[in-house]
Length: 87
Image (cartoon, rainbow, N blue to C red; front, side, top):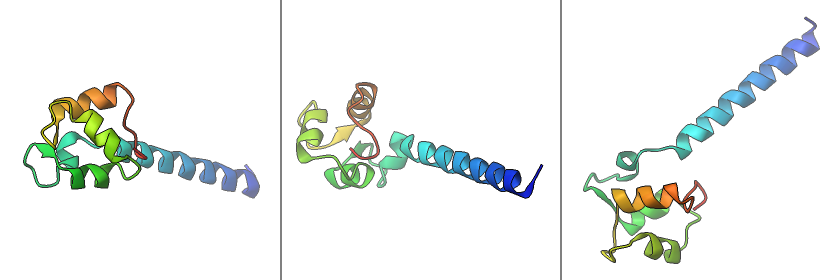
């Protein structure tokens, strides 16, 4: 193995590790997103978790109109592909 091959191998491994870390960040559990532990996501917690999401997205996900997103509503939105790290 040459020095060049070794450098590219290490760089590829580092890129793969960074990709895995990014994927883990996107897969945060509802409990991790619910920073105050009250069992629902407030609009503030929602924006922190999904900074690119609009108010309209929050309202659409809040199926019961409570002004909060509960775990079932969040799960349904994730399953439907409505949420990602960018909102």
